[in-house]
Amino acid sequence: FMVSMAIIGGTGVYDPDLLEDVKEIVQETPYGKVAILVGKHEGLDIAFIPRHGGGHSIPPHLINYQANIMALHMIGVKNILATAAVGSLHFEFKPGSYVLADQFLDFTRTRKSTFYEGGEMGVVHCDMTVPYCPRLREAMVKGGRDRGITVINGGTYVCTDGPRFETAAEISMFRQLGGQLAGMTSVPEVCLARELGMCYANISIVTNFAAGISPGILTHSEVVEMMKGSIQGVKDVLTASLGYIANSESEGTCDCRKILNEPGVSK
Image (tube, rainbow, N blue to C red; front, side):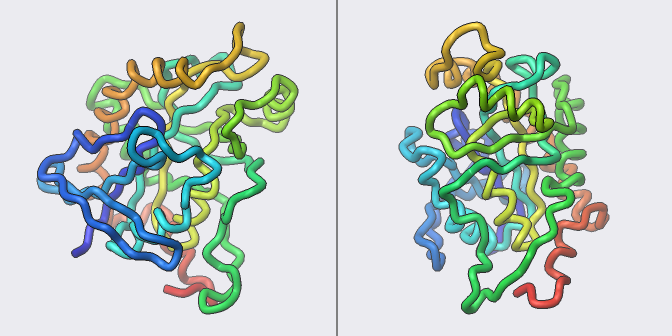
C-alpha cells in the first residue's frame, strides 16, 4: 500500500473533505502510532494528517512530528503539502494572504528536530540551504492561478514553540532578523521531511498581524475565525496543485531527494 502525496492540515484544516473514498489506516512507527486518512482526488491517492489531531486537541509544542513524518515516509509519501496559520510581521502580507515559505528561522527549544540521534540511524548533518521544495511551491502558485487565487512565493517563517503568542519585543527582533511570518509548527516538520529526502512545502495562511503590529491583543479564536474565510481558498490551491505535482514528479527540478546521496544517510 503506497501513496506518494500527502497533505498535513494545520489550524482550521482538520478534515479531508477535499478527498473521496476516505479510509483510515494506522501506521506503526518507532516514534508511535499515527492515524492517517487516505483518499482520492481526481484519481490520485492522497494521504491526510490533521496536525493538531481531532478537534484541535494537540498544542504545537506537543505534536509528535517524528511519528507523523516517519509514518508518511513508511507508506511511500514523497511529496508533502502542509498548511499553517501564521501572523504577519510585514504590512505587505495582509490577513487573508497565502504565502509559501521559502526559508525559516528556528526559535523552538523543546522539540525533537532530527531522526539522526546516533544508534541505528547514525549521525547526519542535513543540508538546509533551500528547506522548502521549489517544485512543490511552483505547483501551488500554478494551482492558485488556475483558481484565481494569488499565492505569494517566498517568505521567511519564524517558528516559535508556543503555545503562547510572541511578545511585541520578540516580534520586533524577528523583523530585524528578516522574519516575515510567525508560526508554531513548520519546524521541525520541514527538517524531518528533508532528512528523509521528501519534498515538503508550506502554505501559510496569514490570519492576523503579529504582536506590536496588530492594533489589539491576539486571540486564538480570532485566528480560527479568520481561517474560516480562508479555508476554501487554501483547499482550492491544494487540490488544483496536485495534478501539477504528479506531472512534475519526473522533472528532477529540486534537490530534495539528493539529500539522501550524502554518504552515511540511510536510504
